[in-house]
Length: 601
Image (cartoon, rainbow, N blue to C red; front, side):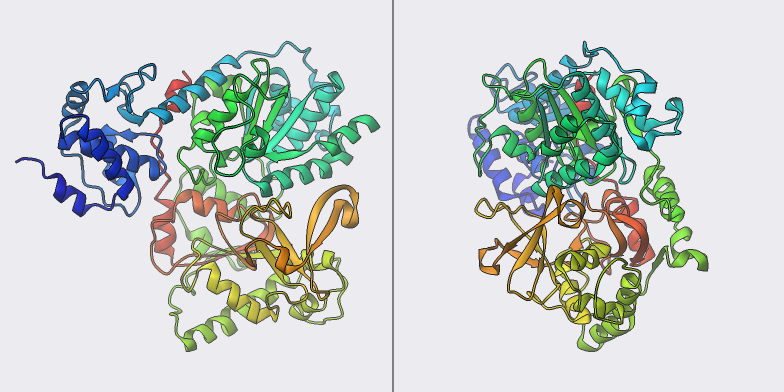
């Protein structure tokens, strides 16, 4: 039966741009409908987050293409696809030396757009060049133990944090991976301190994928200074180290892809440390690797199990999967120091998420003594969305939970008596931040009854904290050069008509914070922030978390999304959502087709 391209096109939801690209290819190849289909699927795979189209998986497991896409299996076998590609050497090559639009990796069955295969090769080459030890004299285990007071009493042989410090000091390329609270910042601060001890003139660059993440890592390093065995000069140097976005570090501005730093003008840095590396896209990391000085060392820190980049690729996870690098260049931190007061949470994350278990009884049938700390309930699943149901949800479920979550906020000055009144009547911006930091409602979605838009409205009404009201938190929604505010930064509205944003300082108010005021009219787009999408919450550390799932399964739900939401928690976690919706999410790991792990060797 002849292949009907028009029928395939009408029955699938591929983006229009992918068909435009495919038609361009087809015109140069005599109008072959099969090549047109492969071209459309290749670009659609990129837009879905993959680095390439996996021809074998398209045949064997088309559901891996993307949740909710309903892509039918390929109309050609793998052998037929390869024979088709071989007929068009002007369109498809097996290496990037030839400037063809498509590149086929026969060993991995991956069909690439040229630029994405080239990006993988650039990353792999930069890492391979740095696989050996650096020439500096290594520190002894005793010297590493003495470098940070947090290491006191810990045996080097049993302490992965100290081992991570040692590895990073000895290697030109190192990866430190671990979940929230496992001490990645402790490791980074110790590495920087010891590096400056042996080379005070070392040029260090610290960066993260987003402005919010960059601000957080700088503040975290400053907070670590009291624990480090450093001189006054080293303390001054560490506290003044800037943290940039990767775009800013490279000199990328706006939508431009032309960077200030590139192979002919490399970055003036000897050591580059990238935090939250799981959020790095394939092309951004490739561009950074191209900009590195040949002698520069590279350190990646992140959580391999967290949500991947919103753009294509999962480069950090791909690097962590390479078995040869696991021996020499990667340390996985496993102990959660931050959430030790909630062992049920730590156990669930380990067994259900990392070890891939699916017994949910520890959540939905938790013993009474655990329920206040870590539990789940299906009670939000049948609320509906009418006026009566909304009132019931707000008064019977949401309000009592908010009072409970805010009842243990300490160290604040307020004239209020109840938890909600205490927030409304806080004495200072710093105290209002303590309430805002203490809890968050996390949702997978922005729209819908259980989306952040509606939840923020309901919580604002429950708390009596309207937009621009005294003590109300807001979140910036996009980077703004004029104010210097970054997407994801949170500010507090105050009764002088201003919104105050806290900034990291060596010695400022509130133990290292300074507060910068803006008029609302000066701010970029912003919104209430009692509730956050889980994507927006990446990198956050929150005492009390309520995670709300949609009423029914949704393509955005994945194992990594659930993991990221749960692991924002320091003390107490509750989940509202149907058990079957949660189970479906945990059974849906994010799949990104890529050849980077194999390229690393």
